[in-house]
Image (cartoon, rainbow over all chains, first blue to last red; front, top):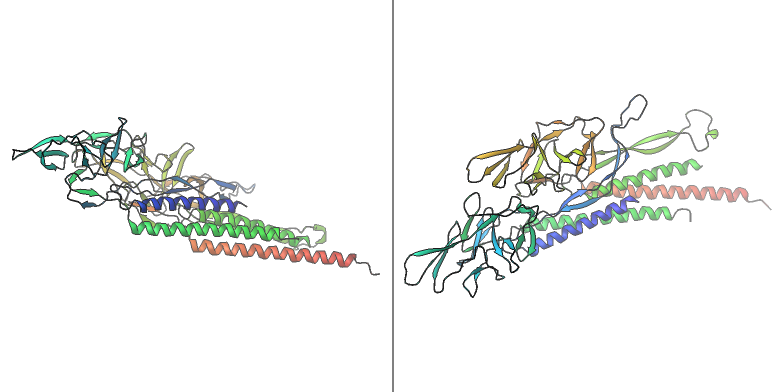
Length: 262
Length: 254
């Protein structure tokens, strides 16, 4: 009975849906997290009677055919790259990007990763690093005893050195954009790597060329909307139950057939 | 007497297929742009199992067969996503998609960009504009899709809009000529040609959900299940009747 298999594809799809929703909810408080959705597509159809076929010698055309679908499949878990809200922290090295772009991070193996999580710290050498300790690009070293670290909207970092009353620019943070940021691959730690689908990274200066501006002292919150995630969760759960009901209906039908002619 | 068995069988086979259709609708309850299928039945008149038993005209036996599945093209509900590349169509239109197998049509507006900046479906097939695929430049941002399908962007440091194309929205004189192909795609069949749709409007940031009515499908399922069991019971009664008759008739009185 086809219905059994069809409903099974539906249950598998909803299970995956719940998995993605639960990951969104788990990352509700993750800085710079971008939520995912699941995109489903119907499976190919068994055209038991082809629409448009000639049904008589007089040229009668069938207005409808018999198309029996085989269920559902998951085609992707696209990431919604919408802006998250900014929350004020007051820390000098907490940065957020409003608009396009990612911070570029140098990994220990020499490759680059990209993040919207601007929870930066200073390491023992005075470099601006991510929470994992990897330097933000280009590497900016804050001199010892420097005070009054300021990062402006373009990403220029300036400090006031001891004995001076004016602040000096000591570096310029880079912001990187991708033609298709939804095509970035998440690697955990709030970071992404570029893929053939995202297109090559294009480095630029914040607040210019359509890149977003940097706000100091604030962090970008996850773009997860709890209310809509909860309603999605309920919808997924009910859809799962409905598919399970179809299986039990098919089972009952088969049972009544096998019970025949005892 | 065998006619009852055959009629019952014809009904059961149709019900089984109807459950397949219901199962597919339910499985796709969360599929973007999915259109529910409904089944049509018709009476199929034929001579009885033993034609010579009914020599007179007008004694044909009525079977049932499914004549077709037709698609319910009613609008699905709109879900707000806020993604710039998500579009939903209000009206009868379809988005035109270029696939390996030729031009196809879809109502699934969950669109993406590929590595060369082309507007593509979730499966990666380019979505067609009135002048071919819509391609974005690496410096484009603030993508805007107007209700008539015109795609504009802000390019680089410019503050003026640049047009990147216009979505090709098509419809069919007879929507049933749009045959489901899987992957949320429809194909034009039976000589149908899609025509430019001027009435439909596009809404950016929204996705059209499946138009499957969960309640309707569930009640249909219960109906199918009960009808199937009923026919099974009828067949059982028929079989018992025959068995009894054979036993009674073969019972030679002592």
